[in-house]
Each structure stands twice: as structure tokens, then as C-alpha cells.
Image 1 (cartoon, rainbow, N blue to C red):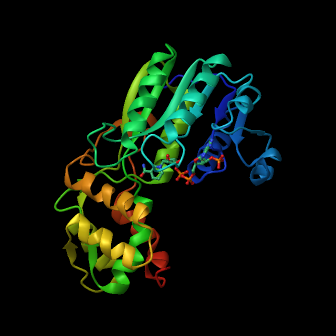
Image 2: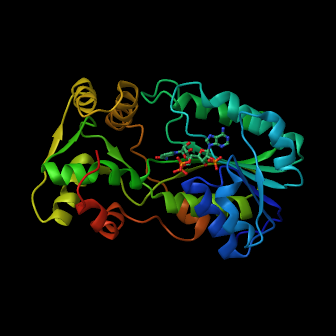
Length: 299
Ligand SMILES: NC(=O)c1ccc[n+]([C@@H]2O[C@H](COP(=O)([O-])OP(=O)(O)OC[C@H]3O[C@@H](n4cnc5c(N)ncnc54)[C@H](OP(=O)(O)O)[C@@H]3O)[C@@H](O)[C@H]2O)c1
């Protein structure tokens, strides 16, 4: 039986997609008081009307974090979206130090599966170092190593359907895809219930290969869409030819390489244990987003 912890609960990055979902979860659960910290408080005016204490805070501006975190008892630190290796670490370090200085007792952090320097994903290292910083505070924590968002299949899915081929550089690697909404449920549950020092791995209910993803896209589109495995360099080149910057193309392809090398082939029961409900399957998620998948691809 989960123990209900007392707030105030701080959610950083509260205007991001995950942050908003977490605040919604907390409101639905009647948990509070809620302190929503964001670089853009104007985006959260609606939350103020629901009793949320919206404050300005930017991890890159340490002076903003003292007032932003003041009075909070438990904090969800949402990792920032800097994709370059090493870039988010100073920002995360500021956030962890400010949480400790503010007297927070428990830190929840959104990490990523396979947070090791050898991962092809450059910023995986930042997650590992942030985990170490959090452990080093001596405070209680829940590290949530989220697997790859199922939602990201909505980025290339329409293209695969339109082209009739699903290109990826993931070889036969499998991924325990988890939806952003399920990651939000996990984060809200950890913030309001967890105690002690734990590292959890948040995944969907099954691990799928890109051939499996292509088969689901085929069902949804009503036509056969084969998976075409490509060497990483070829996929980078194709993305750049389509207009993506080389940096972003390399980041996207590094996800596929991490899949190929087995870094995302992880499925656990941690989400179900934490929230009482397993994650949504890729098939159910993609079927629920059929209209978006069949819309003409952007770009
Ligand atoms: N597991 C996965 O597959 C996966 C996929 C994508 C992203 N992620 C990670 O999970 C996080 C949340 O995902 P999302 O879908 O909500 O991404 P998102 O919508 O792109 O949101 C980006 C988040 O980064 C925060 N942020 C950026 N710079 C910041 C700064 N200087 N100080 C404080 N916060 C800052 C934003 O907060 P404000 O704008 O409110 O200040 C926002 O919450 C991402 O930032 C990324 O680290 C994981």
C-alpha cells in the first residue's frame, strides 16, 4: 500500500509536455500544494486559476531557483532538452544544489535508460552524472529511468506510411517504448508516494523491433510497410538531404544506434508497481493516434 507523502510538491519544467501532464495528474489526485516552476510562467496562467503556485525558474539562472523552490518539500526535476553531450549537466547541477539548499527532502528525476558514457546517445552521460549528483546530496530520491517515448513514433510514422517504407538504423534492436503520459503517471506517483532511495526503470509492457513497429503501421495504414534497416551513416545522409541539420540527424540516428546495441531493450514492472497500472502498448497508442499517422507528413 503506497504511503501518501506531504507537499508542497514542486514540478520543474512545468510548461513542457511532460511537466503539464504531471501537474494535471497531481490536480486530479487532489495532491498539493503544487508549485509549478517554469521559464515561462505566462504559459501557465490557467494553472494559477486552479490554485497552482506558478513561479519563474530557469536552471541556467541559479539566482532564480532559490525563490522558485522556497517552501517545497518534494521536487520533480524534469531533465532539460539540451541535446549536446555535457550541455544540460551544469543546469541540472544548479537545480539539484538549489533543491538541497531549499530544504527539499526528496528528489524525483527523469533520467533515461542506459545512462552510461558508452551509449551512442551523447546526453546519456549527462543523465548518469545527474544521477550521481542527486545521490551525492544524501537526500532521498527516486530516479525514473524512462525508456524511449512511444510518442516519438508520431514524428516519423506519417513519413513511413506516406513513403510505404519504414527506414531506421536500429538493426534488429528492440525498444520497451513507453508513452509520455505513462511517464507522467510514474512521476506524479513517485512525487506523492515514494520514500527512500530508489532507481526505477519506466517502460511499456513489451519490447518491439522496428519490424514490429512497421507491422503495426501497416495494419493502421491498410497496406504493407516493410522495415528497411539502413546503416547509420546512410540514414544521417538521407535526413540531411531532407533538410535536417547534421547535428539533429546525428542525434536522431544515435537513438537508433542505441536501440541496435540493446540499450533500450528493457521491459520492467516498475510502472505497474508504482502506479497500479501497466503502460499502454505501442499498438494501442498508435491506433489511438491513427488520424495523426495518416495525415500528410510535415517537412
Ligand atoms: N524518454 C524519452 O524518450 C524522452 C524524449 C524526449 C525528451 N525526454 C526528456 O524528458 C524531458 C521532458 O520531456 P517533454 O516531452 O516534456 O519535453 P519538452 O516538451 O520538449 O519539454 C522540455 C522541458 O525542458 C525544460 N527546460 C528546458 N530548459 C530548461 C531550463 N534552462 N531550466 C529549466 N527547465 C528547462 C522545459 O521547462 P519550461 O519550458 O517549462 O521552463 C520543459 O519542461 C525532456 O526535457 C527531455 O530531457 C525524454
